[in-house]
Length: 257
Image 1: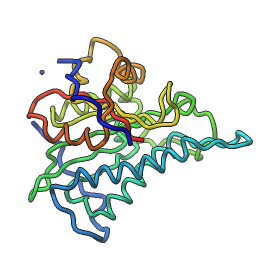
Image 2: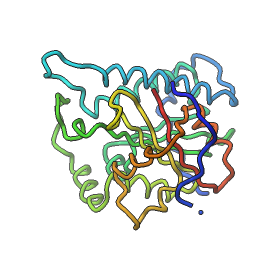
Image 3: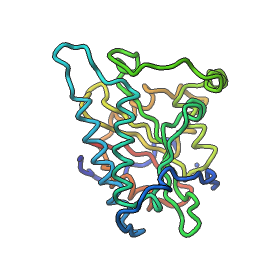
């Protein structure tokens, strides 16, 4: 894992409602250990470490015959499934929940999944992190092997039509902005141009400042790494989020592997 260097950078943009709680996908799974409310950050880091390491194995895979390359959907599923498996084994889902999006929700909202820090005893979301996975351009273009895809359902076709006027990144920024400053957009890079073998992230609750001023797309998000001397660990990211004052902007660059 990377190391925290220096102080938390100031937000480059310059300013609470919550998403209605959804049923946990883990509600029927057997509890295996006891979770304390104050140790979810270390457990989150453990889950992220496992998910990043497992996904990186596939990022680094090279087929000698150059016939197979994991598709974007496969890489996203590997990361998410490994995270879920670890979080269930640590019994942290009553404190820090993960809700996966349906195909229609993913198109309309731009998120692959949403993490939520839950209040007790209500289990209402107190802090939310919406995650969108960004793959290397050659993966996003569909190069390499992929799982066979069935024709779009009618509901999915309708979702694509409704969301056609905005990029996936813009849809997620709109989604987070509609919730408030305690909802963060996290763009998770499975490799980037100058480092195809590692996993990075850009997190912010202030992307809405760019709406109407420029295109919010992969190039815009990846540009945050330029000139930045600070790469936080997942632990540092979560500590910065939970210690931030209500309503304050926060933007971080993170190294996950």
